[in-house]
Amino acid sequence: MSNIPSDLLYSTDHEYLRATDEPDVFIVGITHYAQDQLGDIVFVELPKAGATFGAHDTFGTIEAVKAVSELFAPVSGTVTEVNSALDGDPAVINRDPFGDGWMIKIRLSDPSQKDSLLSAEAYAAHTGA
Image 1: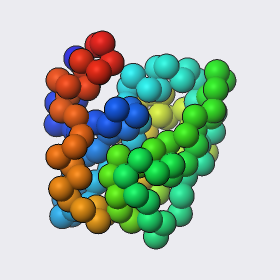
Image 2: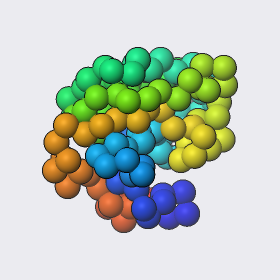
Image 3: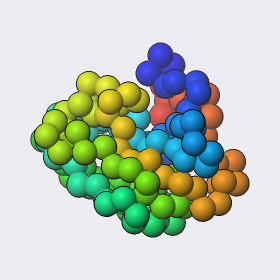
Image 4: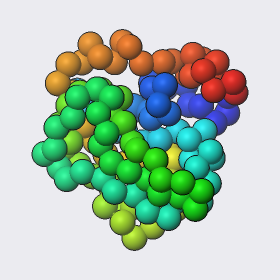
């Protein structure tokens, strides 16, 4: 489980949610497992700040040498910030998916939705890790 940080929450779609210092604002990215399955990431399309999404809505796309995949919001909310560094270097998602490879920050519209996400242990079971 070394590639599944225990302090994050996970969706079955392989996105993670990490708390920030700001109440009800969370960082969203894809997991190590997801980036590993995709292979070399060459492009990512993300929403603009201010966009709103429901849980499980598509919030962007990620393109790798192997495939193009949709990105799904693990919770409902409004995008407060987008990681613009990914525009020039999307491969940072491969190198550091839980750090510099984050994608968006989202302000939860319904904080109770976090309760439906997976713990690190449950995500490990989900992926067979």
